[in-house]
Every structure is written in structure tokens, then in C-alpha cells.
Amino acid sequence: MGSFRGGLIAALLLPAPAWAQVCEELRPGWDGTPVSAWSEALLLFTSPAALILLAASLLAVRYKSQWGTLAACVGWSALVSVYAFLDGGRTEGMAQGCIGSPVVFIATAAALCVAMILYIGVPAKKED
Image (tube, rainbow, N blue to C red; front, side):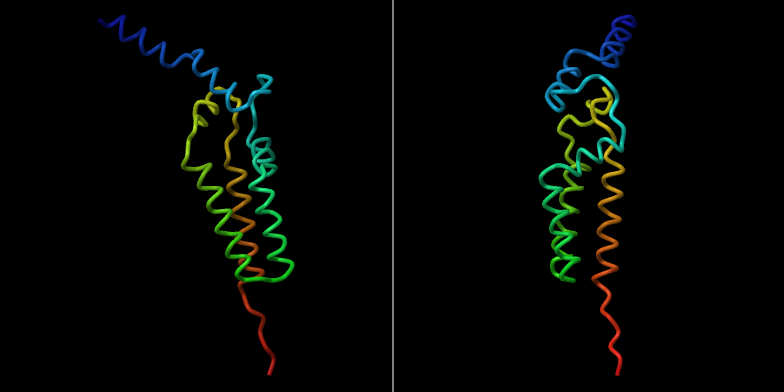
């Protein structure tokens, strides 16, 4: 019984064809080199949702719109939540190396929201 459990544990820990299939589904053109957190951030920032949110953020800052800033920050929060809470095979992809950590993307999106809130959210002092 002990050798059976040892073999079962080894089979679960070693990369299997099912794990390799995850990388084929998530990143079809992956060449086998590990993806860094910076590469993953660049890939995530060039997604259509992130590009729309970047444009909305720029417009909110350009027109100094508090409501636009709020909408952009809520959008960034929703997008970051998708990457943080919905797995969709990302854990297996990160174990294989075809997906990098989204930490840089999440930190940059949070810093962008904080900067927009500080720039737009604080009303200017009126001189009497």
C-alpha cells in the first residue's frame, strides 16, 4: 500500500500531459521559456479591457472628472479582481511557467488608481 501512495503522489506532483494542455489552451504560441512578472504585466496591460481602462483613466485625468476617476478605479478594481480571484487554470500555467505572476500588473493598477484619486479627488483651495 505504501508504494501505491508514493506512486500516486509522484504522479500528481510531476508535470503530466493534462498540465501541458493548460499551457496550450492559455498561451498557444508559448515557446517554453518561463514568463516573468514584467512580461505578464505587459501582456495584461495590452489586453483590450486594460487598454479601454487606460483610455478612460487618461480622459478622466485630462478633464479632471471625479466621476470619471471613480468609474475608472471601479473598472480597474473589477479587472484586477478577475485576475486575483478567478483561476481559470492560471495556477497550473504558473506552475508550468507559461504564465507569470500578475503582481506587477496589480500593483501598477493600484498605484494608477491612487495617483488619479490624489490628483483629481482633492479639490483645489479657493482663495477669498
